[in-house]
Amino acid sequence: MAHRITLIITKESISIDSEIPHFYENGYLIIPFDDDGSEISQIEDLSKSYKSLKEIFDKYLDDFWDDGILGESAEIADYKSLLLVEFAMRLKLNDFLIYHYQEVDIKTYSHSVNFINRKVSGNGYEEFDKTSIDINNYWKYDSCQKKYINQMNNGAQLISDESIKTNKWYEFWKK
Image (cartoon, rainbow, N blue to C red):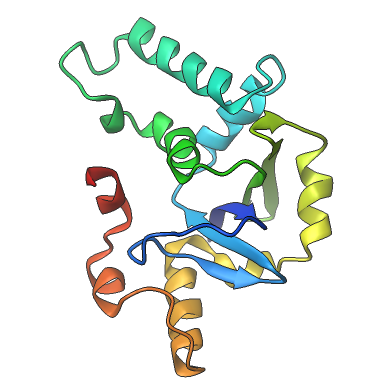
């Protein structure tokens, strides 16, 4: 059985749409993101050469049009590889961490990129360790639903029931 999760983690206080699943743990805002690991892997690779979120985003844009994957009539939002970077850009976060963890059978894989003032900074793995966040709380989106339901039972309301039932995760992009 495989488990995977990508999390955007920040201490910044931002206004976030209630339709977007999000949680709070250890003083951090945690936003789960549906990524199989390919997007964060590309971001991690790009962060070795490009040192700002904008440069990484622009490189994605260049690669997108150069590859011609969707053709000239396609909208950028249709290209899944842009979503994680675009999501981070739209949240307007300055200091945040993107962390991906995946278990497949007995193997584990992880990727991490840390941003300070929207610039790649330090070791993302060390920064994740400092958060003391329990990754087991956030497996894929199903586990996020379970965590949400548990928090609802404890009186915390983070996202609407309708959002969970209809899985409006990407509706955010249409706004």
